[in-house]
Image: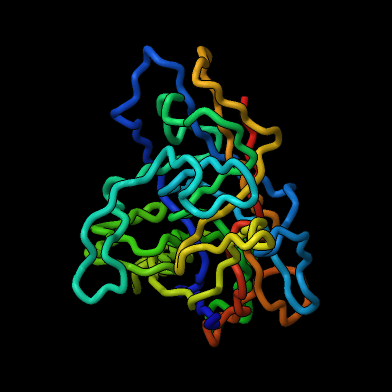
Length: 318
């Protein structure tokens, strides 16, 4: 991944919040509601679902997640079920992609559902879930919004100081293709007006005052970037059973803590919690071996990020 500079700090993923309910929900029928949990203590996995440690020479931090968007939810009977051969209960809105795109469709950001932790992301009739026993769930993560910490050292005169433990908000789009009219990262909004491929990001700094005010006097606090293809870990523990993911997708697969049996005669609502591991999900090359993300205020360069993917999914049904 490319080295980032202060105002271009980023190369990960992040987001702003809004929440909508599916208009097809019928309150007379039993419902299933979906919520997100972001757990920094949950096991850290690699792309194949195996425990993963940060390699020597790198460091990581668990970002403070603000919100997330999911475009697709599928309940999966067993480990041999191909993509979309389970029960797909939700697919977000799309539109025809712009000319020149490698995809025919683009996720419609204007219509996307976005939610924070422990909030109801989506509510649907439970009848959408066909009778059967389900052991896994697939969720296509398309947007993340999170805060990360950094140090800015070796600032030039007249500052000649270091800014430690500074904050930045990263809004990252990791769906296959997304049409974005405008985007609010944290305190500021930027116009985009086009399709963006997987890995597009926007980064907004929140420096200690008076430095943030000085920054905004001379430049836009939001910088845009594009992460290289393949730089995001996508956990797929079913790959060992021959289950492959579509090119460019971020379909995270996780096991239900207990198999879910649906008979079709249910009378009670259920709550499905998608618990994502954010255990040191932001990883970089730690040049000075201090375990913190450091930048140089003179050269406006930062230690190189190498990964930003979610590190696992655990599904809890209540």
